[in-house]
Length: 115
Image (cartoon, rainbow, N blue to C red; front, side, top):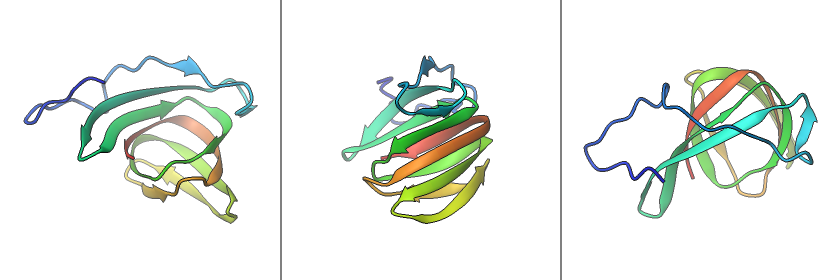
């Protein structure tokens, strides 16, 4: 954790992130990598930055709201089945714990998450 202090500012769009390969069992297409950087915790709620490079991967979600800073992706909701959504800079999305999703990232996606 970086320990973002009250009154401190970071450039969330430019903050360097350390990417790692996604687990092979999650990768569907390509060789996407992901990075996460926890900024702080407020009242037991984690706030951070997450990024994924192009490719397609599955995930099981946690309770989260996120705002896309940059990039583009399509999120398919496998379980429960819901209509797929397209996200890009400015999109605000709510995910629920246990949702199974498939993310197809076409331009490296960076988001601020609150989980």
